[in-house]
Length: 387
Image (cartoon, rainbow, N blue to C red; front, top):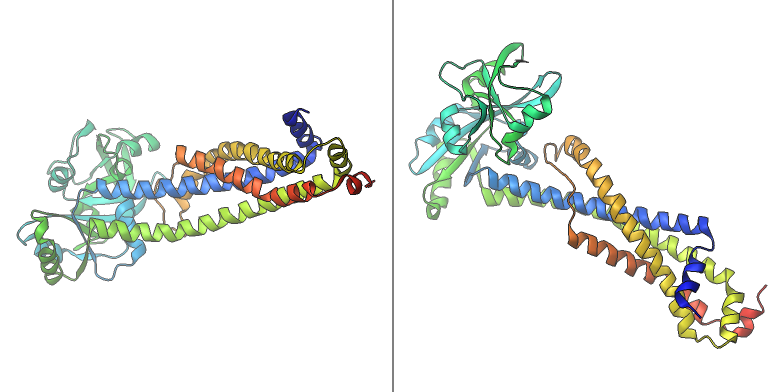
């Protein structure tokens, strides 16, 4: 008796049942792959953006909500502000290099855009920027902007193009070289110009600080808090806070994936129980010609395992495709604007692929255990007597 031929024949005997059961497993595993792929990419992207900021310490508005801390990493608008006098007081402290930022949003060519107000020379030195095209700010460039390389590509903009921001015309004078950070997708203008056109005179959003002596970090933090109405967070503290929020989002995604997997498991159980019921007479014949109980058990268990194998492979393909197309959509709408601006591109992780195949096989074979056990317990007499 060719065991594999028998199993595959039984598997494809009821084609529609096979397809619908396989579809259930595929959807369940695709949900598993897509959600875990996106959540893993989200954590990796936030970590990368944190390292790309280049600051040891972030100085934020006092009482800033935890969700706005994500905006510091993703380059989005920070709603609270700091008085410029606090910046001057903190900059005067010894052992610190302090860079102010003002982030605001405006429509640029009918698309919402985050505008970053900066001190040109200080930020150039701090970020170690290089120009891809055009030139950097000079003292006379009050109505000029520079843009990141991704921004230029996505908006089809180049050096010399004019853009309207809050009713004022600005000329793009330069495009930054690739930085592999949020700067690639941003627009920058002098801080004083940004404060004027957005009505934020005397205000900034946050400050990036580099500490000369890391061993005196606590001392510097105490001095900063005393110098202004602000709160501080080290780069590691900020990253931990943001990852904790992302972790709570990931738990929700994992619950959704778990529900899909449970539904797929019940679908497999139903299919295999039906198969045992319909093939009682066949089981009786096999038992009558000497087929052992463990062989019957093994055949049904392998049949359910094949459902898991096929469903796992298809789930990986469908899940990665869904994650790829959903990534940009999720990064735009975020979780109630929580993760807006975070790139969530799907990545092919070999560990996730192997885990998916493993989970799919184990889940399907576990679902087929009871049906296989019931089939193996049938005696030739009761099985042959079934019509």
